[in-house]
Image 1 (cartoon, rainbow, N blue to C red):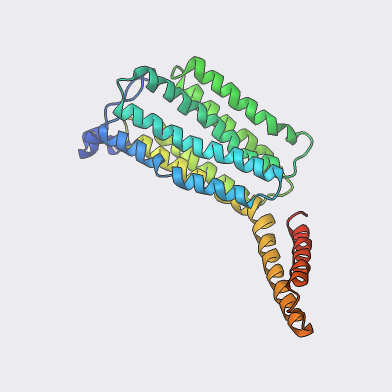
Image 2 (image 1 turned 60 degrees about the vertical axis):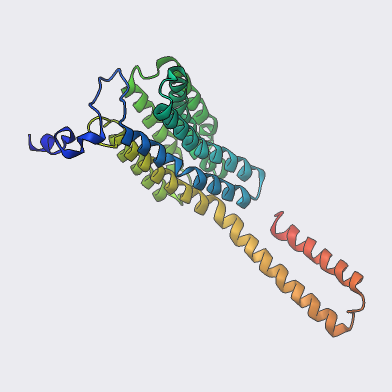
Length: 291
């Protein structure tokens, strides 16, 4: 009896920040404060997600890394952009009921593809067993099925929809846990904890002020943790360190070439010296960048 009274915000001074809870088959209508918070908590992350995705793209060394960076980047940016647009329309253009309804559906659909995109770098760039490799395409089938479900049953069975998100979020994780290389597992688990904790607030509209905005923050923290793992364990070791080594080696060889030319008295032959340096640069690039 004590705990429910402690959490009954409707009887506190914070009640003005939220509206009353609605039945399960209806949509909760946020207050003006909550609308603003819902927009801000995801709009803030649009620019960082674009910059982070671009960083992965520029760190890519081969086609698979580039493709994975694009897939993950589109999923990450799409999540924050679509969410911000939907909440802005819901707040400022609520009279456009059909537009708002369609954007709400797209907002829910994007979550499925964001989950699939978040797993794409791990499934594409890590070694998988013969059976686990099927998860590369199975995760996209799950996202497509979830999209069809939202199209036909949007807001009808909210608990089922939430269960679909949970299943899709955890099922591919079983494959990653079975990989020979387990680097990044703790970061993935930490991100999953953020998402799970956020679900408590996702289902608490009308009970906790700014519940949906708090859910947005947990999503951002979870996505940030997973991005860090992808950057550190899938892109950074194989690219940045190698490229820095190549740059240092190239710089050292150029200095050595200049000293050699000076010592041998060939400074009057710039064409020959430049050709020699060009050939050396091509050899170094082929060793470090194309291997």
